[in-house]
Length: 80
Image 1 (cartoon, rainbow, N blue to C red):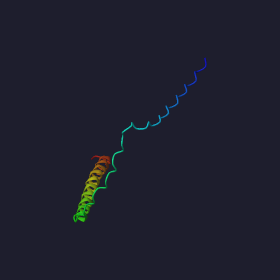
Image 2 (cartoon, helix red, strand yellow):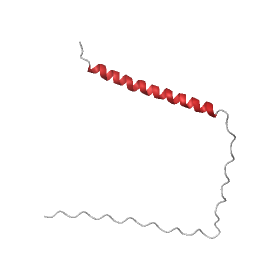
Image 3 (tube, helix red, strand yellow):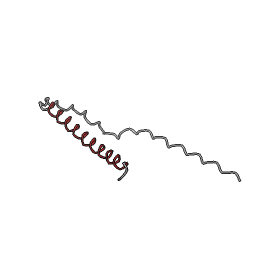
Image 4 (cartoon, one colour):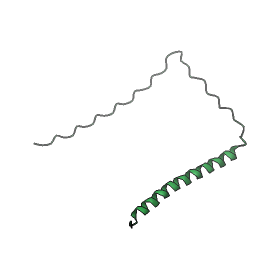
């Protein structure tokens, strides 16, 4: 007996055209641009504190990975 051929996948449904809006419908008014905020003086301080925080997190991660590497290395040493 011959194996049956795989069924062909059905074609995806085509998207429908957009219908025009109902009578009396109006487009919303264009959004006004947000008012510009004055430059904050603490911007440099924020950047510095974020950088310090990132360095601290990287150091924590390095200590955790390094600690695991030391544990694995010690586990491989012959026991007396």
